[in-house]
Length: 270
Image (cartoon, rainbow, N blue to C red):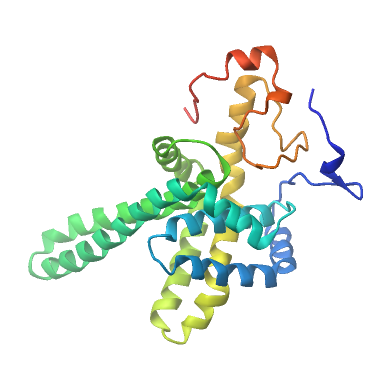
């Protein structure tokens, strides 16, 4: 049976997230946090300036946007900084992987387009690489949500992000279209678009990503984890831990059976 602490209630309002569906509901949430998300966008860009910290900064951005989209109590800079530090290693790994893919795709497409003009058959590998690039982008919509919300390994996150991008295909495509649209605006309207990039672009994309894709992660990754162990999902039990991380065992809530299976290997998305 789940325990509910008094700290989980403020003025009779539970701090647990409520699943949101529908454009109008998320639009309302976004508008309610508009100025904070604008500030978050600026903070994110500052933390991305060293370039190598883009991954950890993106994980931190995702954590805050996830909290906003799920209507969780959030301290803007405090939660950003806390997530930046906690997820620095994994964020760094995925950030470097993303930077590598950007370089490879950019150089590859440039060469393939040049070759294809001389040898039409080269359009085939160019289309294959372009398709692979799209898959990688859609995987990223789930990667940083899992980095900031779970204790999964890098290997598990990569595997699950590929699977989830298929299971949540419609949502993945919506995020992809918005991502491509916003990046195109930044490129084609440069340098005017600098203002747009500095104030709205990245926090909006992340908020949309969390609004659409976090429920997919919760359905296929988080909830099955607790169901498999016969545990109550802290989100459902209104538990508000200091760590605010999922998949983390709390000794005061463990049963004898849960302790026996504590060291069992995590199995996610089969």
